[in-house]
Image (cartoon, rainbow, N blue to C red; front, side, top):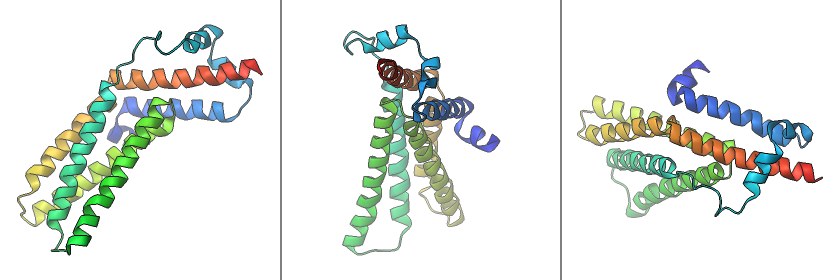
Length: 193
């Protein structure tokens, strides 16, 4: 756990831990969720979304952009390393991973906006996967004396920026706001029963 906390960051690790606790609380489907919410909070989130203050989604958008940039540099380097392929296989080796990573990132951002911990976990997993693939490709590039190391260093810089944003106050506050909104909604439904 200490290594994970060091790898993805202390703030993100704490956000994931708190999210797991709230998810377990919601999954119980009993009145214990009412202890984490107040009627004032539930009334506040019951207002129309136009009357609620806007949340800053820019950190999430920047994280998504940096993850896509790092993925693009990784994918292009990987395709450069591969031996010559037929055009069909070359196209598949480009489009299939691209569609998978886009699906994963869009799903994670949707879940994050809905207050699910799986969204934060998804972004953390994509980030960790990209770090591992970047380090492996960079090691291969150094061993083979390839000139594609510059693109991988740029990918690593994008991943460092994404980690910084994922552990930043703006991203954490956005995730907590969405999670609190979900918790208040579940508690309000529970009180009405």
